Length: 301
Image (cartoon, rainbow, N blue to C red; front, top):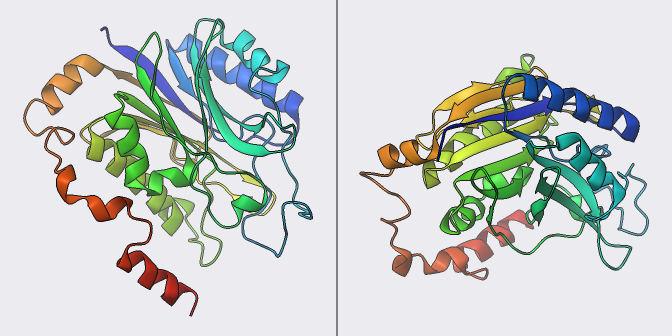
């Protein structure tokens, strides 16, 4: 396997689909000019994310939130991205319309001009997101011409089990697509020093290092509704080293990665997936464990 050039995108996407597609086209053109073969766009690149977070007493039926357009995985909106992608591998986030024509999912897809290789529906939902989207229920990696890839979205990165599931399914590259905002209270004057920026960056490095995989973290930038995004799109290697980062700016974090050679070097000694002790990890997957129950009681006290 030869080295490949990858890029994670930091950019702002809104409800204006024409504007979104123009930005997607422009970004792909820039990436192509820089030799990129695999580009990861943010969560909700087609139609934008929610305008606010938090449960405001809404229900799914009564929410007043500004919602992104819901599109089908096999619909014209995704085909338009394929037309723009051509021979480039693209991961991109969107709001998926379920088979029942009503249920909405916060979703991502990986494709090129000729094929859809895999898709994913966000499993972990923060701060009332369940009022706007149904949750996904699975993690699975898939093969592409460049690498075996896994997808996850935003809050998923806070859960080590999510990335571990993909790594155990053979993912060599995990793409974490986000619309990750700054803290809602006590926001730092320098957004790069904000506590939620810190969490975003720390999770990216930790999950790459936990699983000794390449990690492509895209994110929205700028503002939308009440949310101010922290950017910091990046590429991280299996040793937890940040190879490229946009910081707060919009743009591309571009890096050349050599999967086979890096895996030989970084997994040749301490190989985390091999050295696990799953016979001792039972409580990790027990939803009714005493520690979880105790914290739930404290949270609702």
